[in-house]
Length: 100
Image (cartoon, rainbow, N blue to C red; front, side):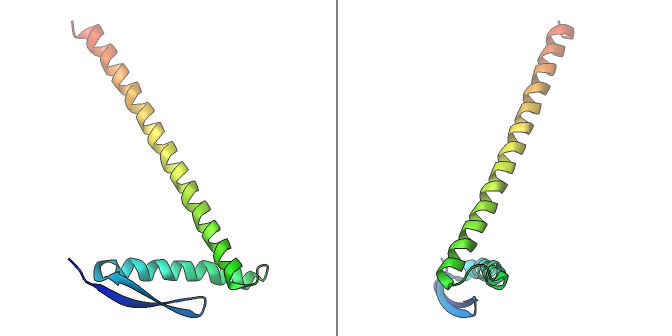
């Protein structure tokens, strides 16, 4: 089992110290960079002022993107399932028609 380490990440020019295992370190650093990029983009747009508001907007944007990707993935899975069912029906028909 990995022990917890303290990792420093910088988000919107402010340093945060976060505890994580060594196995989680890369993911944490990657997540922090991603969040920083989103928050920097919102800050530089000039439309939203204040760290709290920028953080909330970044969180909403990231959540929106995640939920949209989940919907796409669910739609793909549904399409694949429909194709599998159609193939099963064709196989059943062929077996019943020609297998006897």
